[in-house]
Image 1 (tube, helix red, strand yellow):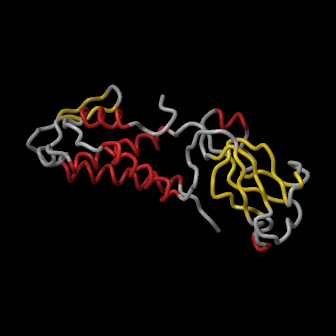
Image 2 (cartoon, rainbow, N blue to C red):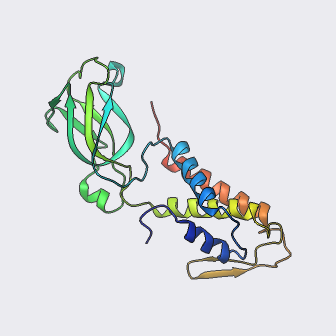
Image 3 (cartoon, rainbow, N blue to C red):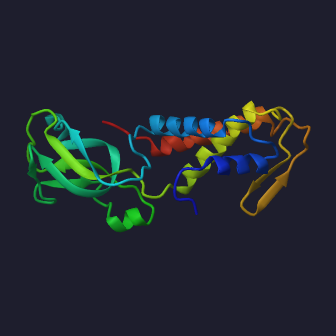
Length: 211
């Protein structure tokens, strides 16, 4: 089961499954797809590895009921401070959504996306400091992995020397379907359209909504 974004080697293998040779520059094509995913979903850190780091925020506006949009996901928290004073969870703030737990994150669920302060956190800019591991997911969701993999393969197909020749077969898990190699129904236009639609639909399922 995948745990992170697809690799260039996996995209190359996916292209081979679809019956064509990946073009040069698979790394760049994949990087562009991942960059599009991050930009379109609206999370600064959707799936990132690394140690805890400090991130600074302005306090939330009163109109938001003291709720701070983190613009990132959190899979762990070390500390939350205002003007250098460390706060206490449940006494001073809640992590949102409330149903997120360490166990749910470990099981593949999303992390926390907001902090709700119990009292007015003040108006001083850059006064909120949060130390934590910044990523929305600790393990990539399966549908996200597949959408990025297929979108990268679709873009590769559009650029490959075999484009327009028709895909000979499609394999998904244990299921394999063979097509007429001269048919255009699963050629460059058809496959790229399907992959792009799958990618966009998946983006909307994970898109960060700001009120």
